[in-house]
Length: 382
Image 1: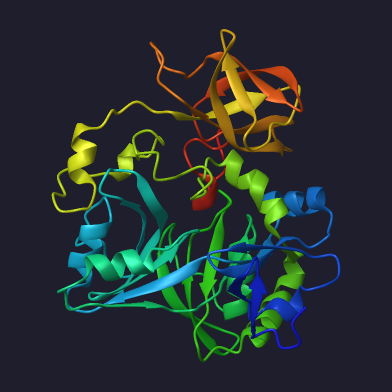
Image 2: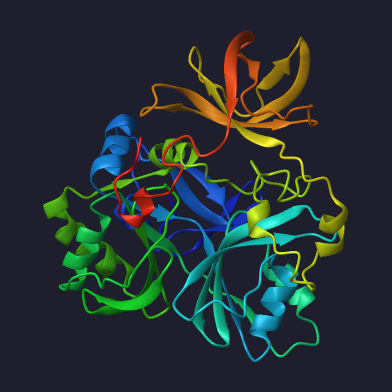
């Protein structure tokens, strides 16, 4: 542990950054990893099953390593429409949209959430990888400033997350603060940007830091008011099953430059009528077959890179695999090497786990809450 948590540290030969909240959750039990150049906790050493239960029924606080990139200036919309696969000019101030960026060959370079803060100002909450330099390169000759904000993101996730937000503000959550809305709120005497979003498929919020923020004071305030709702802090190990159950992709594991949005099942986030974005020409000519699907296995829990077979032949591999406490079976995503006549959905395959083949079924994503009612604060349908 660094003596000063604000110092950068050497991890795998590269400089990585500590969270400004690290003093509140670091212990000898923490298992660290790196994401988007941030050190973050894979595990806090807590009871993962209990943390998952609280996430599904109450509220959990997560210190997450997404990296907000600021895009500001008269040409901010022009740059965004050059980089992202959907129109941006029609996004209203105070709204978020899911944004995919492709390389010239149509492969997925980055995914994340784009927040419109003002007519000429956006934040892109990027996943693992580097989008800053891609934005800078595509913005040459434009009147726009691209800056890594260096901000950390807190998430409060779970059906009681908005109760925690209301208590933290000392006021009801506005009715128009709907799913994928974003606005500034006063929380414990500090002004912070909050979005109605998250990485779990549950109702939740994300709170974005700023350079004037007293981060530890914010954390303490959230935990204090959240005690009435049994708010606990968690780590990636309890988020992971929910994000897979919810069909949420992870860049550089599930998604990559070798996969187009169509192959990833994300073609609905591509508007080919937007004639200027990088990769459009390639996508116009690309195969539209989906190659990334959900896999359910009742007899084992698959892991990343486990091979998937069909008719005695290897046909793909797992990009992620977890035990689903809600479905009580192993689930994950399988990336197929090639299409098959009639499509992969509904096929019975074999997944090799620890050297042994297990029967599995291919299905559409998400595994739970196909109508995405939970993040809207609505009860899920069967």
